[in-house]
Image (cartoon, rainbow, N blue to C red; front, side, top):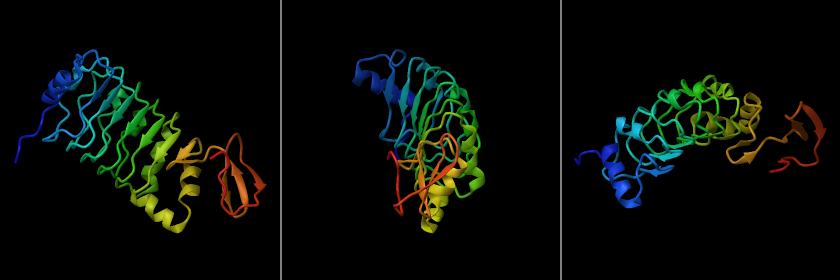
Length: 212
C-alpha cells in the first residue's frame, strides 16, 4: 500500500503549482491527494493568511492542528473518514462555512464552539437522534443547513414530516436541504410563518414554499 501524502508534501506541491507561498495565500486546495492525506498535521499552522481551505476527498479521520488558521472562514472536509467534530474550537471565532458531507459523524458534540457559523453542509453522515440535531440550535448565526442522507432525515422524510420537525427545532434557519424555510411552511392547508412570530393564514395549495 502506498504511503499516505503528508500535509507538508501536499503544501509543497501546491506552492509549486500555484506559484504562491502558502503563508500568503487566501485559498488553498489540497483535495483529492494521491495517495490521500490521512492526518491534519502541524504543517497547517503555516497557513496564517488562509480564508478557504479544502481538504476534501482524502482519508482524514480527525480534525486537528487548526490553531494557526486565525483567518479561516470556509473549511471543506467532505468525503473523508471523520467521526467527530472535536478540533473545531480553535477556529470557532472565524469559521463561517463548514462543508463536511460524506463522513462518519454520528454525534455533534463540539459544534457549539462555532458561534459565527452560517453554513453547514453535512449530508450523508450518521446522525440518528434529535438529541444530536438540536445541538445545532446553539449556533446563533446558522442560516443554511444541508442534512439530507443522515438516518434522522431519511426516517422523517419517509414519514413526511422532516421539514416541519427540523425547522421547528431550528426556527432561525433560512434554508434546509436547499429549500427556503425563512418565510413559510405549508401544513394541512395553512401557512405557518416563523418570522417574526408564528402567524397562521389559510393557504389554497397543499404544498407551498413562499419566496422559494
